[in-house]
Length: 226
Image 1 (spheres, rainbow, N blue to C red):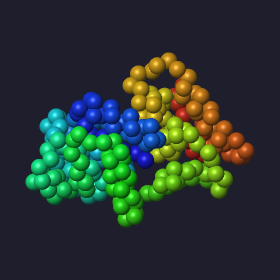
Image 2: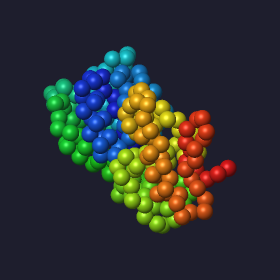
Image 3: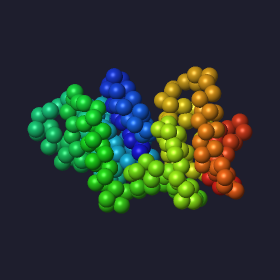
Image 4: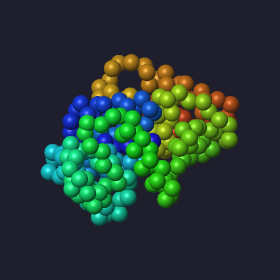
């Protein structure tokens, strides 16, 4: 799944991103309200994890209200050190779907997120991705092509989900490093090449039409040939 984390505390952000990343999810991160609102308004997410108090000219409640005014119904889990009952009520009345006070256990955060996404998916949110005859089941975390199951390791699943969400687009190495591996610099490693090669073998081997393409000098693209 793909989540947006809007959190200005670097320790909390690292804690959440590490846990969700290890579980195979894609996590975008903003450390201020302005960038958080921009990402939430311009990208599709399964859920948003939103700190209540943020720098950047707009706080968590402001983000929620702005999103709901435009009809954005993405589930929102509010994180806050404000544990007073009245503050929780304010957050939920503003349009938040759940409220988790700090400090919190990662297991509870993940459980609440999955509960939110299940409820939202039952009302029509996407539960799968498809490119040509390649299908990714977001609930069961299973992949298949032309009905044939594909066994993926957690990182391969995360890589494939990102590529499928950007099907037809050229995805650069920098984009993959930052979103799939959480590197904000190029560590001069061949980790991407190795995982792309392994993924290509799993989704293309034995099929007449390849789907995973290398765009020389640019990156990679998932989709049938033009």
